[in-house]
Image 1 (cartoon, rainbow, N blue to C red):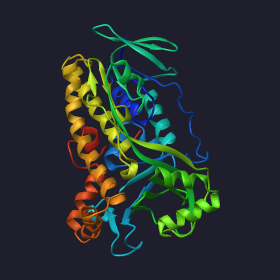
Image 2 (cartoon, rainbow, N blue to C red; image 1 turned 135 degrees about the vertical axis):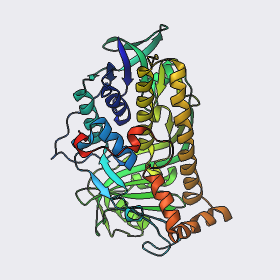
Image 3 (cartoon, rainbow, N blue to C red; image 1 turned 180 degrees about the vertical axis):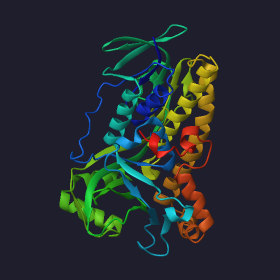
Image 4 (cartoon, helix red, strand yellow; image 1 turned 90 degrees about the vertical axis):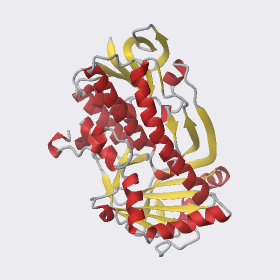
Length: 407
């Protein structure tokens, strides 16, 4: 019987599994129906990228995955402005890593590269990846029997890291509140007329938010979260016309753009599970909460979930407690629900006031970007929060491990 079965081998589930396996005392397996192939260094870049915070970097080092990441692109600055002010003007809010004595503000990493590195770290720690899909759960008191398409699996604890449509959440009878943002995110990779300068760029507009994320090869990944009607119009355009629309939306902050890959899109939805746990079940990442991508915090929140759960399980095992006991899992729920609520509330406010707001309150928020820019102390507060260096952090996210343990 397994101590922990992690359902879902994406970055969050793989991180939880690797951290648990590296404790050396637990038998852990990951159920993932489509594990990624190893990523070659000369493979084309993945269209989906994530922005990793400093706290996430620490977690990945602790999981033994950091050293295996390919094409990591650090960024030193983030420039944020509202469409009511010109790009590169005094009204642009600039966060600079130098303001807090950090080498950078984070890293842009391809999602499949991150997933592959974490699964490899999990396997290196003695974990087992099973190519299997979950079909149902059966609770038997001291364990859970997972019905998979490759046979039954028994575990003392089931971790649901299987996304917004979580089969674990449904099988455990846990609910989730789901509501659409009425927005569609368009992602693509673009070449730009001007260098990205190792900076991330984000413009708030009345009909959405546009971000340019710097990539290691000099191109940029765009995430254009547009009102649904506008997004459908943009997706219907040919590549050249879309690039022209992108140039207008970006105010040519990086010069003229050119698509270098296909466009993809997905609707944006918020999700919040009232309960993250039940007896012998814990939810992580998108299975528990989905936030707007404008702040790039989705994966970072999930990695903090993974680190918090792994820490509490390790502590419970050291005290000879049952890791699947509800009392143990509720400690995780209380910890992470409060932290997610703080970040989620801030993201909702940014989207409501800066991207879609009108009236006095929205105008005050838009003008507030320039006010924050004039206060070094306020900028430091925001930067440290974005780096994931504040709040109640798991030990592995706080620590700065020695480079020799980077794995």
